[in-house]
Length: 371
Picture 1 (cartoon, rainbow, N blue to C red):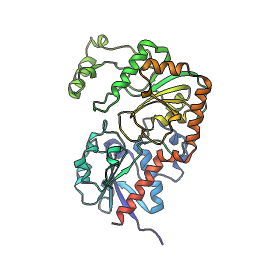
Picture 2: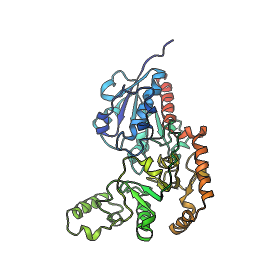
Picture 3: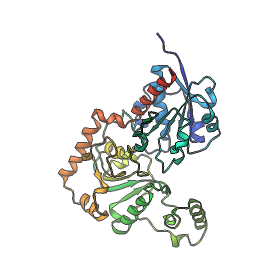
Picture 4: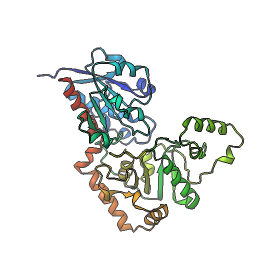
C-alpha cells in the first residue's frame, strides 16, 4: 500500500536563500560528498541548506514533498517556517493561514528574538526549539531541536593532523546586543590575548581587518546610534585613533576544519547564553582532533560528556585558564582527544546531528497530517 502524498510549504527567513535553494534536486547519497559533510565554515552552502536537504531525503520515505510557499501553497497540508527574524512578503500569508503550521527555531534569541515571542507561538501547532524554559513547559507543542545546523551523521571521521599551533578562535567581527549575548566576552578574550600573549592566539574570521572599535561599550543599549557612529568613523581621518591593531588576527579561511585541525586548542564561544543544547562550534573542534575550550551556559548544556572539553567557567580568570592549557601534560591532552573520539563514535552522537532534527520534523509532519 503506497503512502498518500503530503505536500509541505516552506518559508525561509532570508529572501536571498529563498530564491537560491532548489527543492527536488537532493539525491539520497548527497551528503556522502566530503564537500558537504565537512563544509562547516564556507559561506556557501548556508546552514539551512543542510536541514532542508535532510528533510527531502527522509521525506521521500514517507512520500512527503517540500517546496517553497509560493509554489505549492494551495496543495499543501502543512506549512513550515525556519526562523522568522528577517521579514519577507511570504511570512504574512504564512502566519494568517489556517493550515497546520510548524516553526523551527535554529538560532538563539540573541540573534532571532522575534521567533521566541510567546504571542507568535500561538499561531503554530508545533515549535521546534532548544530553549529549555520552553521545553520544560507542560505545553506539548514545544519539541526539542538540538540547534546544530551543520553536524551530520556522516561526520564520524576525526582529522588527525599534526598540531603545529597552540590556540585559535573563529568568529566574525559582529556584535549582538541581546542581554544574553556573549559578544562582550568574545571581544574581552581577544583584547586580553592581543595585549598579553599575542603569539599564543590566532584569530580567524571576516571583517576584523576593517576595525576593532569598542563602540559597543558606549552604546550597549542603542544599536542604531552605534551603527551611525561606526559609519561616521569609517569615513573619518580619526578612525585610526579609535581603532586598535590586532596582532592576533590571521584573516579568513576557506576550510575551517582543516585549519582548526592544526591547533591543540580552540576557544568555542556560543552566540548567547541559552539553556539548552549547544551549536555546532564545539563539534568543529571534536571532529578536527582539537580540544575545545567551551563557553556557553554554565549549567549542563547538552549530551556531550564533560571529559571531552575544557569548561571555560571553571576558571577564576583568563590567567588561570591560560596557565592550565599552557602547562597541560601530553598524557592529559591525549585523554581529552580519546574521550572525544569515543563519544563521536557512540550512538549518543546522533542526538546532536541534523539527521536527528530532520527525522523529528518528519514524524511531526506525519502526525499533524492525520489530524
